[in-house]
Image 1 (cartoon, rainbow, N blue to C red):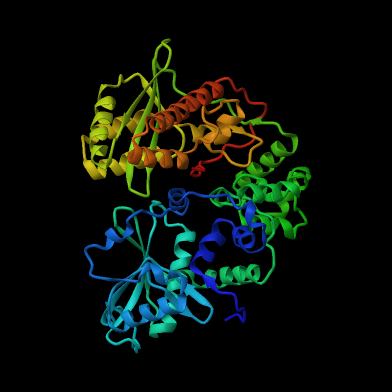
Image 2 (cartoon, rainbow, N blue to C red):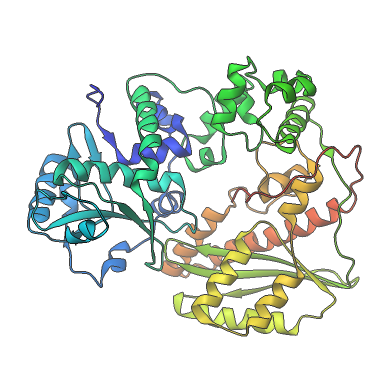
Length: 496
């Protein structure tokens, strides 16, 4: 273990995977430059849920008093006492030397279950039980930034109880547990811990920009630092390991990468797929010259009717509260329609209204959305409330993801390819300058409390702007003609 005296916390692992500079800026940057983040938005950005205690209502547990959060030693002493009694614990504090783990929940399990799994000589210092750690995240994906804080907590547990848990658990907003094996991540954990401790000891990370940076309160500084040195990480979807590899070749800037002969790159980076390397090279040239590169002619259906679709959700409360549709029938002017849930109880109501809308759709219709999220939500609502399977199949058969179309068809001089980025590039403007998915959740939450119609109007307008941006993007895509077809790339999930 490092000799560092600065405490390493669970939050450090989360922040490291989103943006290592987050840790650096928290320690060394002018705190007046720290963007204020409302409590609800903080929950959103960290994929947390409200009232998470309710997800454990079916288990008996003890709760660490919130007033102890400022006294780690006292909170750990209380946690340890509960552990010695074999109690389940909500919001525990785990400590070992300079490590401080803060999982959402600890569950006591019988040691016999480890013995039955084939492990021999297992003995917990606590008695006939040992503990496993849980966290709650509203994201459907099991991302590293969610797993590593739990690996950290599990290794602290090993030092406390003498037994390393086999697994840790991530609960979604519905309370459904998803597990992963701790052993699969121990090697990478040690590398991550080393990187975190270097930052805590004063070593500033290399410039790097990725979508996770958008979720930090330091994004404006992070992007300015990366732009200032024209770092190669400005290339869309270039990973930190890719950056390190290029640094080793002496390629540190976008310009250097763009100017390097492609054949030389291909010869040097033999293990990189050709389509990946070509995409990065094209992206670097697009950024360097501030010009788009059209790869192929857009192939979209020729139909009589079109629907543009977007959903607004509050994952901190597991509610999908607004379904917006821009409907274009033939040559008529597109018209906006929406289904709004005035509270959680009305979610099933708008689901039924949406299914009726899909049922009434003409077969000569294309449904456009941007990214994977809309399909994910519809599948979730179908599992939750049911409905005719054929209507979900009808939606899927008529749906087209314009994010896929964009990434297949064009290279843009952008760092990210979210709807706001791409539609903004072609000149579309949102009504509210502060409009965004997270802001919409804040407006909805305030509207539920105050019933201020201005807030309701603002969030509905934001949703309408989103579907109109999707329409504008589709119309723009149909005008593109390729200069030279270089690559046809498969889709990864978009920035969201």
